[in-house]
Amino acid sequence: MTETVIVSFLIAWFKGYKWKVFNLFKHWSIYPIILTCILHIYFIYSVINNEYWFLEYANYIKIISLLLYLLLIWKYKLIDISLCKKINKPILIWLTSPVAIGGLCVVIGSKLNQIAMFYNNQKMPVFISNSWATGYAKTDIFINALKYGDFHIMGNEFTKLIPLCDTWDFGYCSMSIGDLLIRTFVVLIIYFSIKECNKSKINVDNFS
Image (cartoon, rainbow, N blue to C red; front, side, top):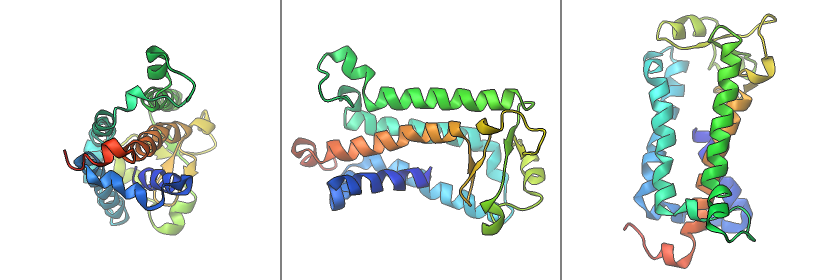
């Protein structure tokens, strides 16, 4: 989710925070997330070099990567702020918090991915375009990946529910609508963490 973290910082930058986005690095809670981003870049490099050993642990890595955002949620109390400024009742604040909205996106995104896999023999069809040009995808990529228990296969004309499959090829990976929804959670948590860390009370807190 490295690209999603970068997009989150860019959104905050263009929303007026500019260099203040780096105030998020004043607390240790962001660093485990940055570590997973570095790990993700390494995995991309590994695939380009025909190394797929990490796919055995891909699901665990994804789950741990998402759970690490709980650190930001805890630090900046994101459950206690609402996306709607006029809401002041606690229960409504929780229901409209970036945590609740982002969590709902994760649930819906995960379900959409499960539906796509259910109708395609528990496999996720991938439609490759840009990844051929970047060298990320090779003709034998799925054969090699399947050896490590990966559930992705090449999409074709017999694929069912194509709009729910991995059709968004960014050159270093292909994503589904469900994947994009899951990443909405990351954008919300990073953006609102930047917003909260720039409030004077938290900003003084530094590494505590």
